[in-house]
Length: 239
Image (cartoon, rainbow, N blue to C red; front, side, top):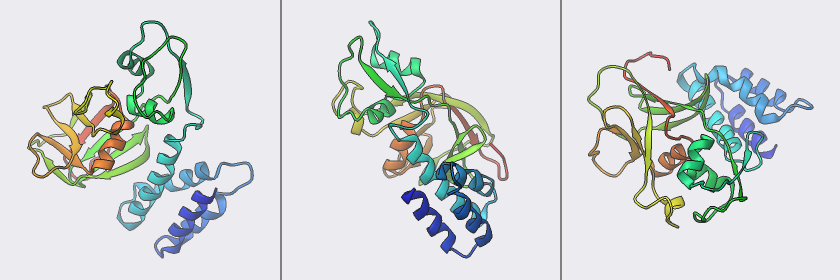
């Protein structure tokens, strides 16, 4: 409640679209209605407007949604009991989750050996990644609902057409069984054209889109092999 109130107060303090922001603040606290849920319902239509209003709505939605998604006790969090023969790779792919998300939700500091009967929290990840080249932004969607935007700091892209692809793999400089894996930088390898989504480190060498280290690792946590990726290269295109 305190976080939602703080975000709404900051948002309402800005002059643009003040009336809608006032409504968002009031109705976020209707009795019996989760405040973040109501605020998100009011904010979603504004996120696609563009301009100052759209940008601020996206920032607010991103803060609220990421907090929801990373909550170990959130309503979408499920539990899985390890079975004989499970490995980490096999388990997370079966669950439709990322290893980084399992590590986070269970408060793990490293990657323990799996034993039959172990119970882990997880959440299915069925998001859609949209790389908006003209806007220099990577956006995460849940169906048609905006989740969060990540600024593209640099890119190496010679393509001309829009592309539908998927996340092929998640790579890190250490083994997934290493104690350093949870904190290691992640790279998303796309199925099309050898493209990557990676952390910016000077001039891009591989074709792809480069984010801040924090944003890249957060996006990797929220995606998995098979996650749908759309690369939009034309202005005014919709995901």
